[in-house]
Image (cartoon, rainbow, N blue to C red; front, side, top):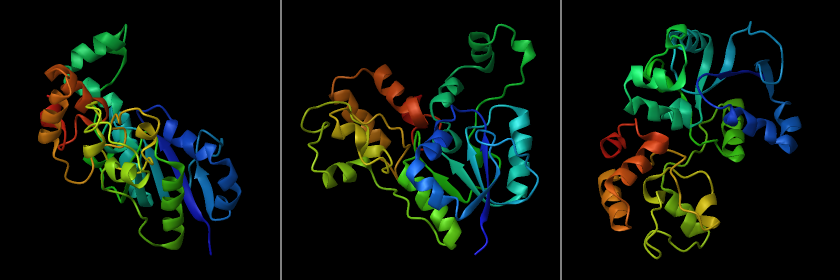
Length: 251
């Protein structure tokens, strides 16, 4: 079986999603038996020349240059994967969308006239996405599942239910109903293994919205835990406030 030609691209984000692959050290030798790294600036100086079987796109889109590059990637890749929450929801960088463009530029850049910046958007706003791989960053097992799926030509198994299901599977007590703490688990996509609640920390929502979340009801429950209306807005804005599922509550 021929190796998959893979490319890894980074737009507006922290590169943490790519680092999660590098951290999968024990799995890399076996992984490299099935994929060929055609382009990955973090690990090789090899230039991008060939068309790709799979393109991993990390980060959201915030400049005209990124739009042009993204469209070229889409044209030259058989499968395009939105890699991590920045690519899917805008994640933490999307908080700037709740400011005007000029406010954001003045707050960040001493010379705004030097930059070309646009309102931040997800990858799917500009091109068709074949697979959305959620997480900030995605769990290494999920990344490996997606790569294996591409190698075998099958649809990868990705979770779309709430983090609460993972808590139940781990026999965790409910931080929201039992302790009245502002946990975002009921509306957050699973896949992390409920890592935060397992360590007695509330879920902050870093895997983005689950399938068909009831955000309106969640906002009311958060108020009942003692949060203010502004606190609730910040909760929804933090990782996915610009998504259709959470935008109303984030405003």
